[in-house]
Image 1 (cartoon, rainbow, N blue to C red):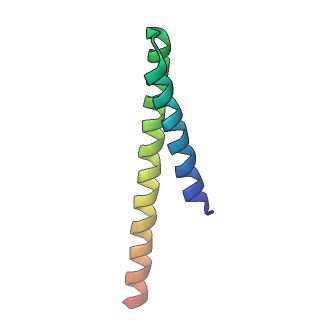
Image 2 (image 1 turned 60 degrees about the vertical axis):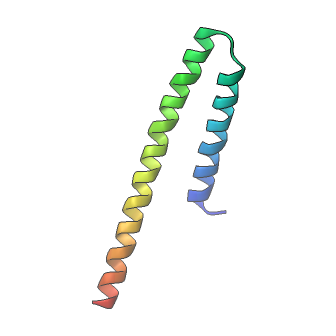
Image 3 (image 1 turned 45 degrees about the vertical axis):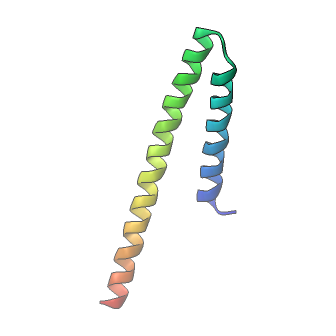
Length: 68
């Protein structure tokens, strides 16, 4: 498994865990804590998407240079 896949699988597992805890919680304070975790996860996912976009753009530039 490559590093990108491992990072995405880790984020997905954390997201599923938080979602399950949020659904099982009747406590407002606990729900608020999980929502904070979900916020943090969303920031990590956005950063991962940005990394992938940059990597794809870099790969396109290399391909264009080789064809050039």
